[in-house]
Length: 405
Image 1 (cartoon, rainbow, N blue to C red):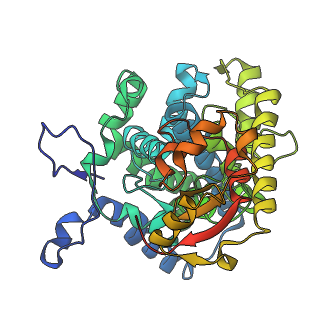
Image 2 (tube, rainbow, N blue to C red; image 1 turned 180 degrees about the vertical axis):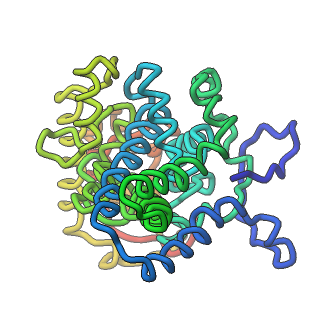
């Protein structure tokens, strides 16, 4: 699982452009390891699954082994290494590194780097599994092609590079992968009850495929299905079904607001087996320094989002589709006639006459913006206005500009 370095060493801009894939060079971008372990091997396993009888003991072992593999990804790769939401003893880290390899999702270093990039550049061109590129891409399409190395510009990996367990796993990942995906389940089922083929296919390959698909749902379903109780700026969402599939990773809207919290479901009733396992490890002395955001912080964030939705709901009494459309020239003429205080922001004309005495920054700022494009002033040039300010502004909309100034 590699990346293409197509930018000179002295390019520190970090900017990306979406360039179409050139047909005669498309094969150079293929990530063959990604294709082999997420498509070729699983397809072979699924084909054999219908030909090999499913032994009851093999099925039970595959389910148990699959859950341990999944927890090693969610509690290990994700919450321990990608977000440092808690600290673990060396024996636990070695256990998670080995069992995490059985999921066939790459070494810790590669997984963490991709995930931290996703959090830093969510829904942008630099997001490795951006939801804006489609459900299939965010689910697993992103794994099949090597990515432009520029997307990782500025991602801090110092803690990972200094973790000797991570370095050890990365160095011997190929051998650990083969042992945990194929040899270990085959040996257990073969020596245990004589089901050598079932151990290789059902407890090995099919189990790996199931864990992979569950993890991939965090990148796809969790950005497509559910609610946004904490922030609707980007695509992450909360949904119980996704949480059930992913061992608790489905409260993704919360996770993107509080990424360092060892919990994905902050409320006790929310389905998050991973947080329960981490808590159990804490009681056993295997995990410590668990990061928990306070109930006050969580409730405050939830309240802000609720207020934003309420303001937006009130603003929908004047939908943009029902507003008259005016040219930029007409807007200037009407603004200068002095009858109304008209200001244009993001292509929408607002009558702020009644609001001028109430403006926290004083009426002079609004007077200076009359007849102008005040988009930059409103969105950070003078002051980055709050969500409530955006909601209030929406209630003052009177027209839509059909021309760009």
